[in-house]
Amino acid sequence: MDANMAIFNGLLKGLGVTLQVLIYSVLLALVLSFIIGFMSLSKWRIPRWSATLFIEVFRGTSLLVQLFWLYFSLPILGIRLPAMLVGVLGLGLNYGAYGAVVVRTSIRAVPKGQTEASIALNMSPYRRMRSVILPQAFLIMLPTFSNLTIELLKGTSLISLVTLADLTFQALALRSATMETTQIFIYLLIIYFIIAYPITLGFRWLEKKQSVGRG
Amino acid sequence: MWSWDFAISILPQLLQAMVVTIEATIVGFIVATVLGLFWTICRRSSIKPLKFAVVAIVEFVRSTPLLVQLYFIFFVFPTFGITLSPFSAGVLGLGLHYSTYLTEVFRTGIDSIPKGQWEASTALNLSKIKVWTHVIMPQAIPPIIPMLGNYFIVMFKETPLLSAISIVEMVQAAQIIGSNSFRYVEAFTDVGVIFLLLSYPASLLFQYTERRIQHRFDLSVKASKIEEDHYATNK
Image (cartoon, rainbow over all chains, first blue to last red; front, side, top):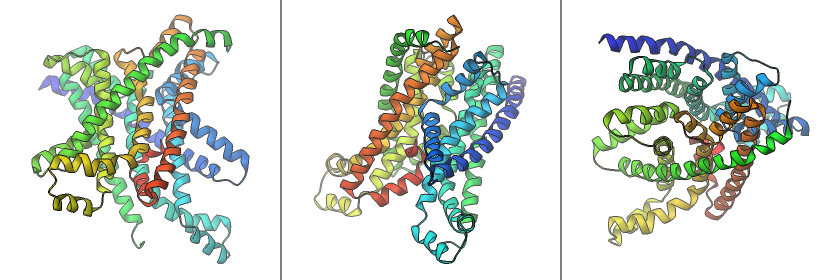
């Protein structure tokens, strides 16, 4: 029992780091998703092209490659970032690229008639987006954003490979200290599941709440 | 800072490691397909406990990190007497993880088959195996090929995790080069470019087949629903 408590306490130390990185990178990814998503819908070529470049580069090269690049390569070019920032930046940029595609396809999925009707009602472009298009697009985004958040949570385990002391990192440290391999990794999997499940439930609740009064 | 000579000189070494990356992707994808089909069949079973157990396994595996699952297979299995080589452990983990995504793809494919097909098969007194191999699968598989292709690319981009259990794929090879020469910039940039050069054309190819197949099977409505359900179709 004592050994179990020791393992549990050890893992809890990593939980804080995992949650911190999760929250910051979700926020960064969300902001980037909308900025890049809107850029890719722009009528001007330069923002549209730079958005495409951003999306393809960050989706096309693997997340771990990006993290290693930020952690190992960037310091040689003279920019040394703290490990925490590397984790948040790497995860945020990578999932921001995926999110941007979601924002783009969701906005495009809103029926054309909605835009035409708002123009007919003499709404300003801002008002049209803010009160007509986005609320409908948002509903389309939610299920996919829910999946992406779970993917991002799972992605946080990779920061252990750039020496951040998250859950996975602590588990490996505990393993070499106690050799209680089986228990440690079973607990670790269960903890990740316990974090993931409320996220899924939360998104489902948000979806239900948002779709009230809509066909 | 950046040396073209060095970036080019390490290419043979990286391309050698790329072979391992591609092997792992292919074997992992085969494992994922077999397991994915198995989960799909179990979920359609009339035995309630089996159905429930498989739903729980799929949900659990999908909600926990692949990296941790790889460690689990690599470190925990030997304590139960199952010692796997890093490569087997790697493709097993990769395959197991993505089988939980592929089962959803297979399910959408099977669910999209009109009820009449099942009823007609029953009316024609076809055996259960015949129904699956001659009626359902030939119709369920072609529309989902682009989605399967997308997951193939996703798995390809996840193979760097195998470096954590000491497989020398591209990222591990780059790290070895980097730690020997301290030229991390060239090493990791090369790997990133190789990934991009392989995955981007592949994703364009699958987008193209998706359009072709949609056109042929008139699946536009269904495909857009599928895209909502599985974000990875965007990957």
